[in-house]
Length: 309
Image (tube, rainbow, N blue to C red):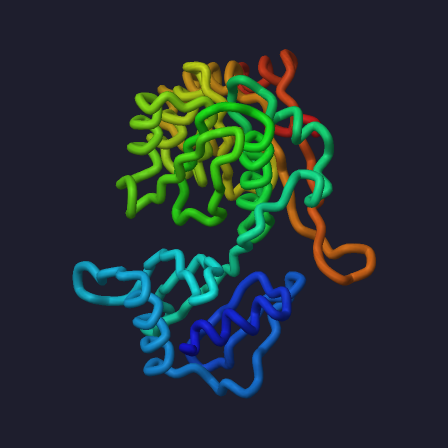
């Protein structure tokens, strides 16, 4: 067993969500939202960090491009026992650093996540755009996976997911699911979205919308009769709508407002908070449902401090 697999095994045994390896420190794990040092491993140096990074890349057959530096690389790493993990290799102060998110093989249901009933209602929509927002580590991918799982179990349709990387592996149940990974299966979110409209989907999951091309493609997909789920690294509904509009040049912003007013169905803002017994974390959510009044506010650009959750 390599050092990477050993660290991941420890993290999973202790229900950690993340592992961090950085120069001059012992490995750190995040458990219940708090970072804890792992004693016994010693401080990481460049040799050890680069060896672990190469161990990951070689196992996943990832070739280093350009100048050969191992920096800003995203990869899904699978351990010998089949568990999957999202890994980011980056540089800080000219040293290699590694962040590992431990992914769950089990896809939780909406009931297991104790989601409000309105979340199930959103999965029953025939078309439109549903956004899940929150800071990094707030469980957006888990919420989206649970929504897709609900559709997979209850509807007969074609689901396409576009992710970077693919985190939860879905099996075909009542629905057919095709999961595309940016970099491995498609060059970008926007290209995959444009292509998906020729692939007869009913439901599309976009892992993240962070540029104008992806936003436009997602909105177009929702306008043309598809149900689109996506995520934004934004704290709340007001900020999410503002970001989606103001990322565009001024001459195009009214067009986007009009389109969002038509296709946006809900914004789910969430974060993870400590449970009452202190043994784990639970979701705290605010859900904005877009009715005629909210749509008119979006159309008129009056969403600043006006939207009520």
